[in-house]
Image (cartoon, rainbow, N blue to C red; front, top):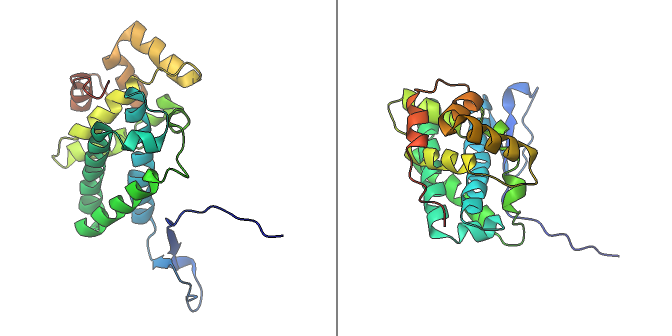
Length: 214
């Protein structure tokens, strides 16, 4: 009996060469690196950040799936530019080639465009409080961009969308909305991001217009 299995063409296989004893196996598709951290960060700040950003932006626009969200020009524009910002950070911190990062972003977005593997935005966007954390996919790169003298304008739009995630079936979303109602966006963001209320990132996010909404 044969079984048809649907797979996607995108994959990434990075191997820590420092842990290999003897000759490196010649395996097609494997990239051997002496320090895997830059590649872990590239994946986190492109794949994870991008997937979640599209979900929150898509939810704000009333889209049900990641594929549908990316068909919205505003969602695609903000998400793409947010990834350009994280790409700037990756190039600055780890010395990645900007053109290589651009091609990587294109591959990641093409993966998310695939309607056959598209996920629902409410599942990808779940646990918004955790994703607002200081060491997480949005706040961490935004803070580091400020340190390098760059204003993370589009990451701020995404964070604004996270604050607006009010999906009633998500416990963290409901807690987040209760906190915002009780304390305001400024206090809520500062609390969950672990930063001061007068931090420029808080100013940037809170002052963002809500243009991503329908």
